[in-house]
Length: 115
Length: 112
Image (cartoon, rainbow over all chains, first blue to last red; front, side, top):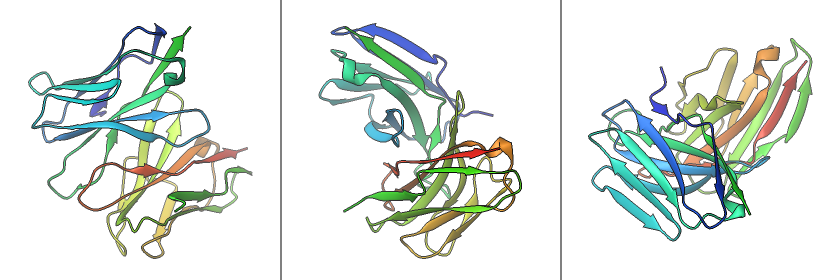
């Protein structure tokens, strides 16, 4: 049973506009959330993260929002650029307990930013 | 500082053949992980090693074995390859206490 879900396999956005990627989780033990970006033929690279004690974290053009009551997080990219075209994976972790360090990944969303 | 390295980059096997995928990290990380990525399935954990000398099963361990040779190296072995194991395999590592896993470039495996 998938504990982290990305229900949109793909998203297409015009350059300069906002991209919003969504992620839902089911396990209430998750307290740390990450977004990874993956280009073809490369490994995933860490993009941004958020702890459950926060509801927002910003890093340049990237902002992650967390709604704990809804078990939902989103990644906002503003403004979107063609170089942002990649697969984005949402991941979650329960930092306490025996699975410390283990990440649970969603299935990914392919973002395409067109000129 | 090479980060996480994986060998080989590509491999083609026939059904029933065996092979070992190698992974090494030079960041003094404690925990290491093996994932497979299939179209539409995201990243699924095969095995992980929380620390040197320990290994645990992930979501999809059947058909695989692992060895945590030392702190740097974590290998994944396919004893008798099957077409269902055609996938891209990623190794990752993490420093204890943090959550941002670092990934290698992947091994693309095709089993005919």
